[in-house]
Length: 310
Image 1: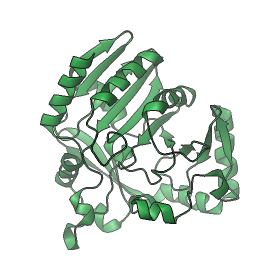
Image 2 (image 1 turned 45 degrees about the vertical axis):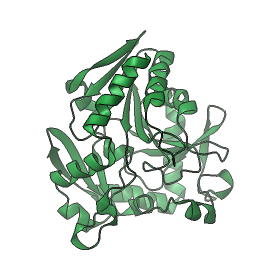
Image 3 (image 1 turned 90 degrees about the horizontal axis):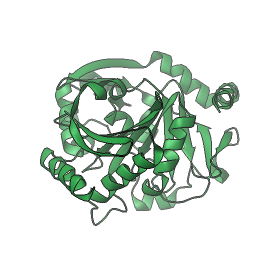
């Protein structure tokens, strides 16, 4: 699989002019680092990501556009690799990572994670050089009407290294899996560490069932990261309370066009506008995370509820 993906990336960047231009542009993106309550965050100025950050994901807009992840609507030049019998591995033409993939379901079905979490773990194991991520329908997914994952170069997100040094405590264990929570006041984070796939799925389902399902939502709001290393899976779950922060809708100097998704939750904030890259501060990031993540009290109740259910 590794060789096939490398070949796909090489061929696509040779034949797809837009994708090549956007990957070449990664060499010139500006990045700054900020300390947010003791956690490292990077801010990336990436103009090409305006497509995702400003995506209209309301029902009317989705109904009025063609689904850009359906096979029939892909650009002629875009090619893919089959995976798992019902996914296709595609090169993402608007990259954040040095290597960035989109992995859509071949059928047009809604973005949902519970029935696909096992697929996510399998992707993480077979694409071992990548971190796999899932954005909920109202948590950064620009195609909430079409089930998909994304994958980016492993080692790119700060949380991949920081999580193991900043555990706040253990919530529960099940067979070869342990559920931790992190010492982070503004970003509620759960970590499943597991040597066994079914045990990881069991703990994930316990989290999923304990999360609040809002009346207007089809699934609990969350972002998920997963990767495989040293014969075990690491999964980060970020329970969410809100789709976009107030600064996204603000006018004038208070406006910051930032719609947090899995990459942002993992420690790399993507700003498609230079004005936002220049002015965003550690305080802004803390405020944004506090606004879109569940509160400290809600996170405490969630952990208690998970314990009661296990």
